[in-house]
Length: 269
Length: 310
Image (spheres, rainbow over the protein chains, first blue to last red):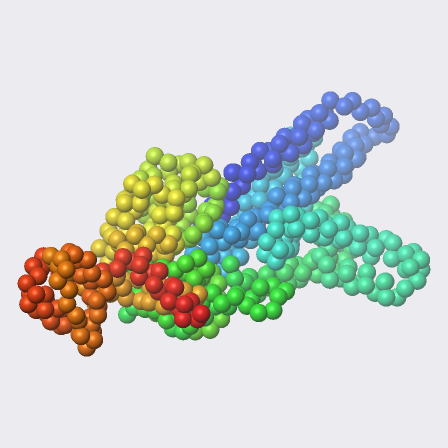
């Protein structure tokens, strides 16, 4: 297990990922510091308690900005890890990894966990830097934002289960990135379909078959965006609309992992 | 117990979206004993690399069985004491030579101290101490080959599977690597050498198997494969004093004024030939059993079945 974590960490450094994550965090920190220079003029009428209300007024957008930054980090992590498994199993490299005294299931799980630890760790560190910056500059103390980070780690895990599966099946970095991008867009559109447009579009489409297909796709495919929304709702102390996106997405990840192990064990290299 | 036991091993690659298959191994049976350097020879596509891959569970056999240290390849424990240098390897390029050795050591459950000690020893052994901290992607072919050999030996394996180990290594390096193989053998380890360089195999291998189209066509010691027991070369002052050899004794293969090559039905018959020559007052300088080079033996082995087929 530690062998894979160290290997993935070496790969992370070698691919200059520290610079990429550091650069994004530096931009976010600069944006926060830059926002301090913006002069807000809000006239308060009423009691001195209004100052607390003003603090509450900035709290929401700051928390949203934090959540958006974490979502961006997850996107970067997913895209930059999409090629790791195909690269590991390319001709010449696969011989090295597969001849180690570990089973293929272990090799797969160890790599998956190692990516989660290293890239997820990078997301956590960058998020922590931004959180501390917001705390120092705006006095934003919101430990509940930890849920946003937990949500990010869970969604990174779900994405990894998918990208590793596609990487294993196709053996191509390009194909894996393309498939990830397609799924990213599909789950956003399906989320919109199920949450907002279903009523109106159903009448327009006038086809039970198409509606049925779209509904099935929504249930079968991961609902990572909606799942992140659930974690945001927890963080922002809002009521959770539905837990369906969380458990069904986790179920999808488990199915992907099972399928990957089954396929991996049957493959010749 | 044999280190490697292969029994009627068959591997058929099934190309995707196509009918039929490519037979890479066809009922191969082999046993490799402890403390021997075993050479696997064969033309390209003979199935040598596939045999390694099946032994290491990189690909699955279609039928038959293979065992390493009495365990099937599907059992990861069978690879604990095995070192492997793949052909056309592309080791993880984000690692340094030392990093690769360390990663391999960690996979084999070694501690940090053990890895550090072993790394220094192995980098010295393969003459890569100066380049241990350089990234693998900056290595030349020969350097990558040396570091590949070092990683194969990191866990102090009982069995070393080396696929074209001297590929890309300069002549001096090849001699050094041969010494390494011999040293490893002397330490009680088994080395299986897959190489198309026949002279290399001839110089280090105790036994050799020749594969052709997925089948073992010859197996034996280098001595057995290279000796041609029935042929003798006799150096003598023959001049024009020729003599006949009866059919029940053998036949003359070639003759010149100072050299005679005979093929005898029995090795004892060499005495009859000597007596006959002495009777003709031919002065004999030497009598030697004829030996083939491994290359000649190899060419014979891989061409005979084809010729028979024609």
